[in-house]
Image 1 (cartoon, rainbow, N blue to C red):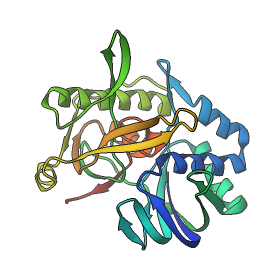
Image 2 (image 1 turned 180 degrees about the vertical axis):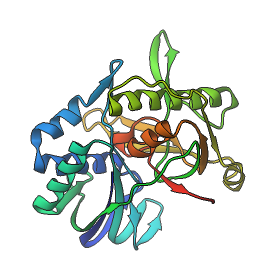
Image 3 (image 1 turned 120 degrees about the vertical axis):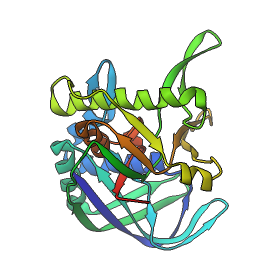
Image 4 (image 1 turned 90 degrees about the vertical axis):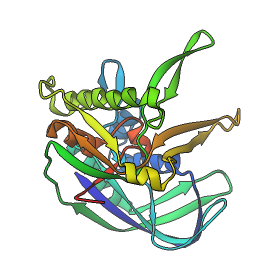
Length: 271
């Protein structure tokens, strides 16, 4: 289930390049307007599989209708839209009810920078069909991690598709992540086809001179001033897999950090 949410701003506004954390906060605040309990459940617990927590929703980057790109971000923006996706009916319903209870929200980028927005239109997007080979465009980067020992302790390492030594692990981790999401969505063990391949488009990689890595500053601790970054790959890709697994990725996001606005895609026939 997908919603296209279009927003108008009270005045010309400036957006930084990195806004994922603030938009995630907006999603939770909109759901909270319908149900504070469900918003708290999603935010703190979510759906658990093998000790990992999944929120089972994702959202796209912002698509600005106007404005200018500068060295510090986007300026003179008056309207934008984004897309929200989830297979969970309860999440979908609470977001819709939350939107129509007020239709306003505030993006807060610190004590001296906030943006007031009015939700002008909400459109439910049509469902699509799934086959065992499909093409997608990234509407946000795809982040994939693994554990890496560093100075005697395990740390989170973001896998790089462009690194030949990490490419196979990048693909296999996406596959195992989709299997977990399938279990949570459907309430049964996955017993389908295990063949899996996800390949980013080589022509796009050539055009970008190999630069498909996105390093997104997610948030900064106000006390320590230390910033958290999420690293993902953003390029068109072809996936060959069980249609049910592709569907799970389409609905919840491919890879990890989906509820932070990562891994959202759009189907295309060609690029």
